[in-house]
Image (tube, rainbow, N blue to C red; front, side, top):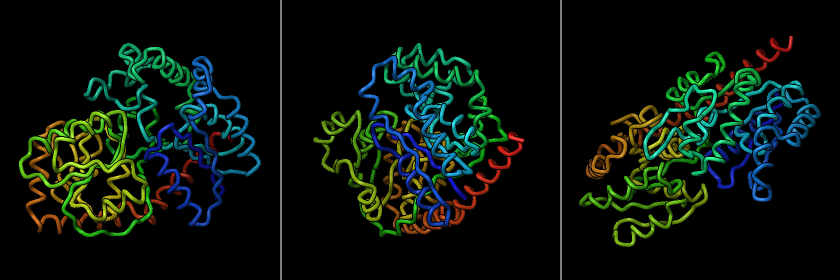
Length: 391
């Protein structure tokens, strides 16, 4: 199959970039021809606010580039990971005009929420769900703390909802969890077009049990950094905690851990370095307070045989089997987190059993063979749907 995979990089790297790289490599290894079409939001620094707003709505330059590339390469499927901001929804129309079926992975809640997180004031918020115009998001300045910037995103969403872009210009959507799927349906996407497929990563190999707990991710409020530090501050006898990553709360976090003897910040690491940390850890902790879509770190942990201690929000209870592949605690409950960590730390037999079950979970649910099969089934369905519409 001839497949174009399109991705708009944010200004800060994240899990979407990793999935884009991993899935394109998987497709090529399976013998498919992959054409990568990418953009970057680094260009936004050179643009004024009005040009950013118009580009977000419809980027004619991206339209022409996508159309010409897909037509020239005789692409059958155009698989989008992210169009925000520079690729814009115009790229869907370009791909369809060039004859390709269009597939979009729903890595976040951008189509339903200007901030893409369903989070406001530290709590889950679905006030914009199902609205043609996301007025609550604008009123609360949910995107980057700016009403005007949020209004620009909300306008883009409203125009394309009204134009039928999200319902008609995409032949198949990939939701990352059963938790996310009904929310996209409630938001207006056709249920018949939404398929559930987990993120893919190549097998990094199994590690050995360690003595420390690892946090690896963006240092920000929605990732539950406050809950994490409070758990280690209040929990007596907690094992060492190693924090990998950086972000908006980086300075605040570093100031707090200076007085905490068993917490260490190890900086922003490469993916291979993070995997190395996982191979030598006792557990991975994910204390998020927002609806995590599908943290790649969960699959990486399972692949290395690492149990996960996660908050009970969003897709996390679906991914982390309590008592089998990890432990789940109540969201925002620092005491519950410290109790879960101490429970696992004090039970070597539980650790051993969980490590085996984590690896088994990876092989059975997240391995390359199953992931490739699911992806190709979605592609084939999208091609049939596109052909029917075209006919």
